[in-house]
Length: 475
Image (cartoon, rainbow, N blue to C red; front, side, top):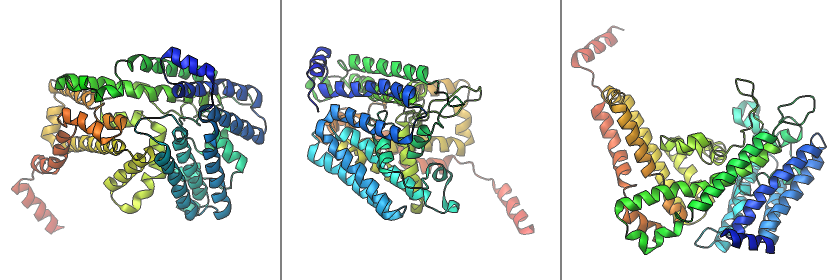
């Protein structure tokens, strides 16, 4: 990290660490930079935009991580070289996966500690996905149109971007620190002036939507800073936590889990706001004709705050990373011919992308268990008219919805414990003190689901079966 005495003093006054404060300031720096681009670069040459985004993004990275920005520069140049020398071939995609993931994992191996550190690997994990996506889009653009999916036709690159364009896309200040992910095609459309709600060369009216997102981001960041003083990760490793009753521990984990996610929500909202201000996020108009600025949205706030299912949590949180994983990993595993294996492989990729700590794999394993248990419950209602009629009963339904909401809330923080504590010696002890109640009920239900479907599925009566058999023979 570059040495800024004022930031260090301010961090001490606010009771936070210097690295976290510098990261927030880097996100906020995107707003004046985006406003300058909107006011003075809109409609100007693509080269000027590429240079501006490259230099400003590198400056933000240098302010946060000092000379460690060399890692990012090396990877940007290497990926461009791959596309330049190999072309839009499958080999370039394979090498891009191996090189980018290998470089990131080497960074984790040599630099990471047993706690969360804001260091050069923090933005580099974001850049890793962006560069893999870039090379893959170049490969998709070189395919025969008959072999392209709808998404590949939309995002594919039919020509090699310049090194300057690759740098501008990689170092764009709106997504260089914590995301969001956005494809090269979207970046080029922004520079060409296609992402605007105004016509005739007028600047986009995106200032107010951007400031609204910034205000929300600052709000969530402040709420996290206040509540984190009471609900912090390390409390779950202290003797005082284990002296609590089972119910008290579960309530703590429940509230802590929600608070812990707020730090991500705050950062993503701040980053999204600067992307809006640079017009990157324009997404057409809604049914009423109002402009939409949501193509880089990483969090659906209303859905996130009012979730009613585990799938709702996934659909509303870290949206762009989930979309990236679906497009560049999950959908390309069709050759496995097994939906569960494709889903498991995608989650294991995301866990590895986060790092080597066992907590990541435990968290994503529980995500897989919860979502599939929920799906089995829905399938059970479809199979059995009896179960379906019971859950839709006007008296039972409200009670069931409340119960489901309580189950969801009770298990929202549970899988995040390993994600936060990282080491198995820490998170296993917490889960053990909770008697693994976030594990065995769901695993038992998954094991019993096929049997329950068979038992509850309505059987065809003998008379109906004979009739059907006779009709079949007559045909």
